[in-house]
Length: 173
Image (cartoon, rainbow, N blue to C red):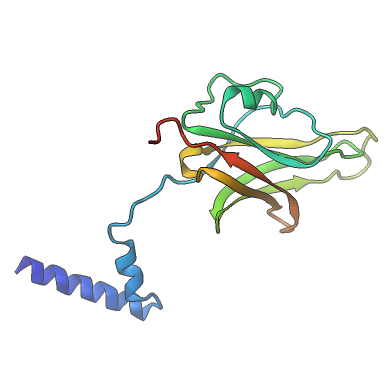
C-alpha cells in the first residue's frame, strides 16, 4: 500500500512539474544524483602583488600563493581552498579598483564575475596595478586544465582570461 502511494505521489509530482514546463525525465535525473561540492567565492583580505599585465592566476599551496600576494595569511587552508587572483594590469592613474563577486563553473570553464571600478573626477597620474583575490572551494574544481575568465558584473565586458592547471587533491585516489 505504501509503495502504491509513493508511486502515485511521484507520478503526480512529475505531472505537476510537466505542467510547469519541466519534463518528467528532469525529475528522475535528479533523484539519487551525486552532489558535487558547491563552488563559492569568498572574499579574503589580502594584498595582491603588482602585475604589469592583466592576468588570472590560482594558487593551490602556500608557496604558489606567495607569488601572487604581498603576504600569505596563515588562515588559508590549501587542503580545501584555492586562491584565485584577477589582475587588471597597468593603469595610468589612481582610482582603479576590482572587487571579485562570484565564481561558477559553466561548460567546463571557471567564470568569475567582478566589479571593475574606474576613477571619477580628477585623479593623480600615477601608474597603478589593481587586482583582487578570493578563495574558492578547491574540491569543486575539476582536476586538469581549466579555462578561466573574468567579466564585469555591470557592463558584461570581458576583463581577462587564461588557463590554469588544477592539481588532483592529495586525498584523491
